[in-house]
Image (spheres, rainbow, N blue to C red):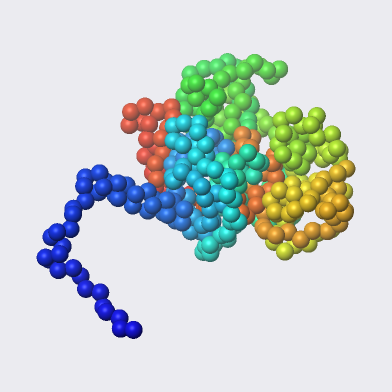
Amino acid sequence: MAVQSWQAPTTETSKHKKPKGFFREWGDAILFAVVAATLIRWATFEAYTIPTPSMEHSLLVGDYLFVSKLHYGPRTPQTPLQVPLTHQTVWGTDMKSYSDAIQLPSFRLPGFSEVKRNDVVVFNVPFESQHPADLRTNYIKRCVAVAGDMLEVRDTQVFINGKPVANPVEMQTSYFLQVPEPNDDIRRAFKERGVINFNSPTGEPEPQMTEMGPGYVVNTTEATAEYFRQQPYVKGVIKQKATAGNPEPETFPNNPDYDPNYPQNMPTLPPALNWNRDNYGPIQLPREGQTIQLTPQNTRFYQKIIMRYERNENLTFQNGQLLQNGKLLTSYTFKQDYYFMMGDNRHDSLDSRYWGFVPKDHIVGKAVLIWMSVDPYGSGFGKIRWNRLFNLIN
């Protein structure tokens, strides 16, 4: 069969073509923009903002970030029936922006990096079961341990595989600042040093009366705490930390789903571990292909993974043991890698210490750049934190 090459229409035929109307032109332009923005947002970079202080002072409330999907590879959508450029709700409403009638397997396209220790990572929070995995709320934390690592926290210091790791430069924790009385000097120092209480309408820490007298409980860096130790208007600076051996029932795996009613709603779990936010572990992170022998001691760590994140069927959990098709499950081989995430603001962060491991298929991307920063308590030109614009994220 002969094939005729395509030829452009002549001027004579082109001049009779009906031109697009105003609304048609704008409709085509908007459609193209939405498709292009959706593809860019899915495959390359997406903009996020920091709404909470869990990463202070490394990242500040009001920082606007670019998050790279290229580093770890973009994920194919699991929930395809969704209004473009939305997450959980339609803009400005409480109306759900998606339908979970169709749920597809999610695959990750190749990236040029794996998740590494110390990366600042955006991910879908695992414990939020009311949404599909790819539409759960986005959290941002620092990855402190990767698949296969043994993690432990001793007296606030993180250890990986038995060795202490370097703390983030701007890591914060809690201190009690004892003062003779609240005064303008310390309030001025709070503002200059960026010590903020986001539960206060003014952003200023509020004085408290304690057994040691008046003072302030603040989250700040060790450098700022040392600064206050040198000030004449501060009588003492005491680091706040949980005592080893004093269990906090809200920590994982004592509270595997971060249920605020634990332990009343979870009476079948084994006795609580003596873990708290500052003395945690040791705990090993599962890696893809790793086979473990399940015991009554370690099942509590991996029960949620095996039942929820690994897409297994016919599993039940009875009397602290896992059963598949009614038979006791004595060993298990993991299907994906898992990570441990912590906020740099160690005493004001809901993170893996409370709800456990982050599956690889929940990883969104790597935070790489601050493109804008707005001080929620600033005004005028002072509202923009000019020194943070276009800073790389470490």
